[in-house]
Image 1 (cartoon, rainbow, N blue to C red):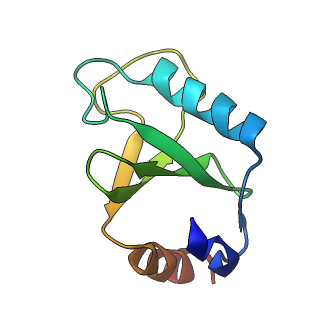
Image 2: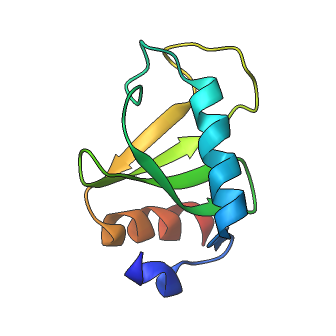
Length: 99
């Protein structure tokens, strides 16, 4: 993510090990009825203030904000997500939510 230097606190870029762990957690939380099921998702950043993680959806060429539940209880409604067409849209969301 070239724009990662433009992240605003409390969002941070994660290292490769953490990225893999977050991707594995997401896969534990979704089932075949969840809208992210079967998608190729790459961790981009996480929020230090809550359980939100920003993923890049490689299939749909968009960013997906996921609120991880840290539960293995799979449900088609959870984890909750928000999609952004551009990094700029995500930053605008962050400015409203965190500033």
